Image (cartoon, rainbow over all chains, first blue to last red; front, side, top):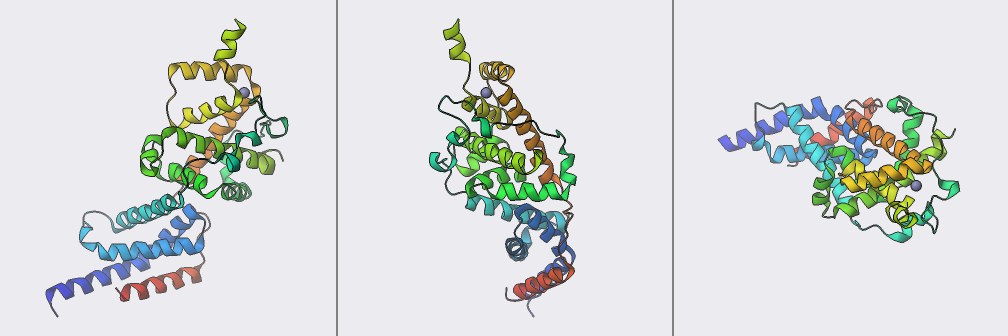
Length: 193
Length: 91
Ligand SMILES: [Zn+2]
């Protein structure tokens, strides 16, 4: 066996060990971010394949887990970026007229009502989390992608604009529409109960 | 006076948009003032602002959690590990 071949076989063995050690955590993380089982599996699989291909870039001083999760997070972000194809908000599908009248004032029936909590502890409630996921997935795909990119990567607005190649005003208009709908959906399904 | 007020008082569409801009970017001093004036007088936009900030905190927290409470099922995990190992063999 040549030295090079031996090294490659060695990489395989190490990665196989990592598969045993880290798959569960990575899958749980990917699923948490995407809420899609099949997608989460694919992302984890792609991560290990990428790790094998770029094994030489792995520095022994960093933790394998840290390295693998950084690859995985890149894969997740790439996915959202790909999902984000129509950056310009279409007035027909996300028109402000759903919430506001001709005078640019709130329509009474869709105006914000008083909520029964101001606390992020509601996240401890699994029922609330279900409603939140439900409401997020009602958003148009590119809006959801923008929301997830923002909160997943914890990036500054201006960096996301660069990533998605949109202007800042495009971005906050998308967030504006997304938040209007999300707020309304949560109010109807949760906070008004 | 009324004309000046009309000029400086934002419509609710723009006020709510600025509330979002305030969260993700920075508002200029003038924008801040105009938004402050609007939310001071418009109860609905004031409420929207509170809700929007809460949603922001909820979303931040949601994506900060590293431990997912619903761990995947044991047999799913084993199947996935096997699938990945097989896939790696072909590379
Ligand atoms: Zn208003």
